[in-house]
Image (cartoon, rainbow, N blue to C red; front, side, top):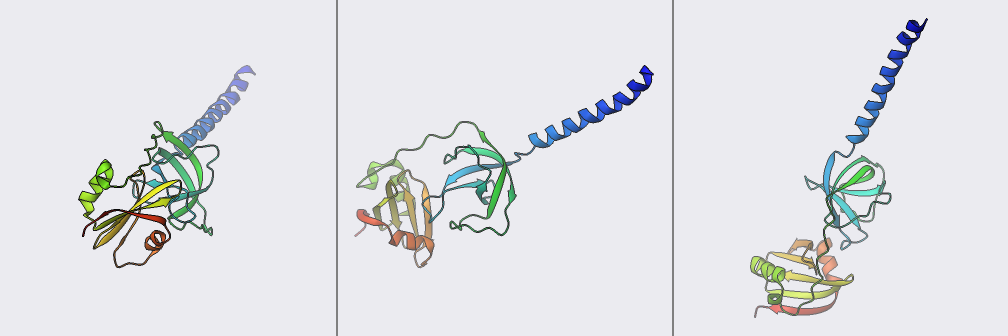
Length: 194
């Protein structure tokens, strides 16, 4: 009788352990996509998006929980695409429900917001001036800081005061980025080529 009970109990224990192990393995493998959190608040109605290694952008409509989104934070995540949803941002490739999100390393320290009256007093502005060779650079009030607009013959570029690109567009184009620049206020010319 004891042997018979053991014979019935052993398969039950094995299957019970195997099921538990599979559930644990599935859960651990969930965060299988690598990405970086990017702050898109410069675009109309956008906030943080997750950008994967291929450049695809994900808007997390659900599942963020108490995870703190920090610009530049590297993460692992998994998701379910939410179909038939629309957003006001319209910069994302997918609207998703996060099923897993975890930080990789420490969040980056925010760069200082720079207000300058000449591009030669700031390293990143000087580098961009040398790179783009604009005929004019303007500073505008932008969110809680400033934006710098580089006007070139072929391409125009808009950067925030930390040196991160907000958007760019061809000089002849009149799209979303051009409309954003035209709505900026308190223009100050900080560089011009006569």
